[in-house]
Image 1: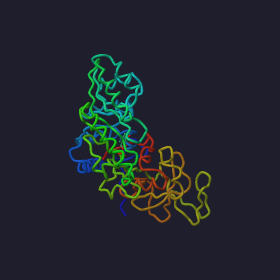
Image 2: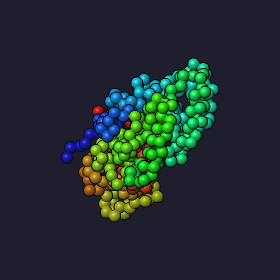
Image 3: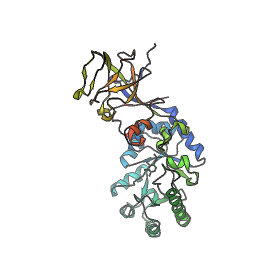
Image 4: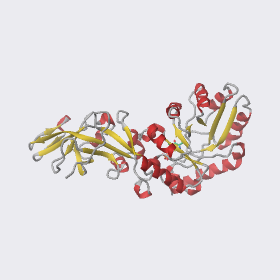
Length: 376
Ligand SMILES: *Cc1c(COP(=O)(O)O)cnc(C)c1O
């Protein structure tokens, strides 16, 4: 049987996440088809959910995305450094007055959600300019002004004459878009739409509500800006459906290699804590990946992996830099590729369920020492 070829990175440790540009473009097209005419602010916070913010931003910008959503000015600065056309919106706005100057200088848009931020705006250097969204708390009760506070907020902003301020629109976030049938979604959408009816004229009318769950399932949540994150990476926010079932393609494929093969007599103990014992003469492959790469320790002793195209499983405990593959019934050998997660065969959604978490968390756990490599 032919060996499956692995990506050879210029670094020597064979452990990397391949990022499929084609899958990313396909998923962006899915977003467009679901809410045609809306402008798309791609959520690339937390290193693009672990997929590589710089890599994904470059692909998405080339595919015509309209903006990026990030969690901090630092993340916005990283993207700004790439010199791409779409600007970043900082979802939680500024965490200090100093950050406003940077946002102003580099054209980052801020989501304004509290009195402190309003105060910093009022005290900006005159002749600076700033573009903001105003966050409305429509029921999540995390960030945002309640609708009742909005008249006061607009009064304060209207009194800000020292700078050139563009209030793009109102922005809110849904708490239960992963369960579309939940009536709380309807409740939040109605609160938001009421705020838009009452206060939209005080803005430039560029409002923003839906994230992935809502884009996929709630056409009535459509606004002029939409904010997909998870679905762009080909992942499903719904527990009962994979991204593939929703017409999305997985973007990430995490690969490593077999860097040693051992023949163990029956009865041998394997690895830390001797957490696995050979019941028969066994072949064990050593994989160059461990929990130091973000491969969860709970994936020891039985997590599915694919070695040289053949389904296998982990054995024993996950070490910091290494783990074990069962090669007893496989012809795999030194240098063969190991699929750890992702691609078509090991959906992140399934890994998430096995670890009792959500796919959002799985990618963000992949450590920074794992290079993200864009492939066409
Ligand atoms: C992360 C985030 C998004 C994107 O959500 P997905 O569920 O990944 O599509 C949108 N809006 C806000 C405020 C966010 O924090």
